[in-house]
Image 1 (tube, rainbow, N blue to C red):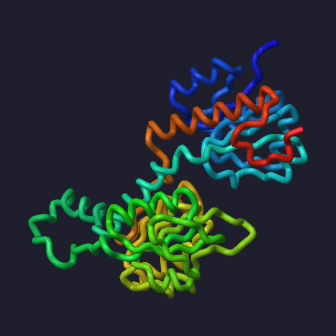
Image 2 (tube, rainbow, N blue to C red; image 1 turned 90 degrees about the horizontal axis):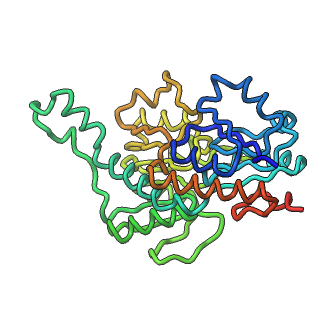
Image 3 (tube, rainbow, N blue to C red; image 1 turned 180 degrees about the horizontal axis):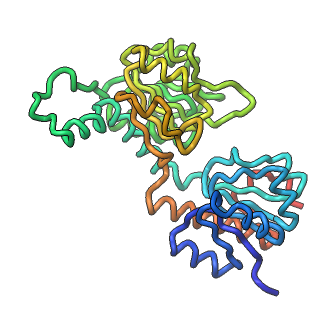
Length: 321
């Protein structure tokens, strides 16, 4: 009996590809957009999928009648239509925990860069403007001893709170579906209270496609004019037009964004024209070490599912017979 056929639909390091080939008969698509028709044909006798972000819809599942498991190389799994996957008895897995610290580091980096205007002043120097004396117009704002409001105090939110509290003596406010014990002297409060009080607002809540965005015009209007907004969650959690308005009209001081409503971000998006916005391409967990850990966990989930075992990180346990 041969190895089960698996499709990898993401650009993976050579080392990851070689490791996969030890366990499966691998078909690797580095760019689905260019090869989608071929991908659909390969799906027909495929038993496993591994990658990031591919929408697992009823249409795709109809093409993949032999599919047993989809292994996400991410903590999120909002690309899964779990109801349809359950109907087709297709397992879905994710990679929690291994990216927590790396993503928390990235969120602190965005916060600090926005506060001290690092990317803006980097351009200032490279555009040979340093000879024009650096004055008050280039000043940033302090981070230490300020209030950080975290919307979504999950693993990553808590890891950011730890860094902010112990590293920068920040006061932590948080809003979450449930209150949680913490060692950061963090104060639970309503969303409106958090937005009104915080000097920095970090959004780390999971996406909920059935609800309106968490941050819209009303929410941005509650924030301090000196406040900075950071989004490391999902683009659909923020109404981008409202954010652009808040930034242009001075309702908030600045923003730092790792995620967007449409990814890749459209080249005509006004966010790209604003000096008081930092934009990075969804790189919260993007270090070589962490991505390899994520891949190894995703591969373990995949192999377990193909061997008719319940994967460690199975998100739809209804599929276990």
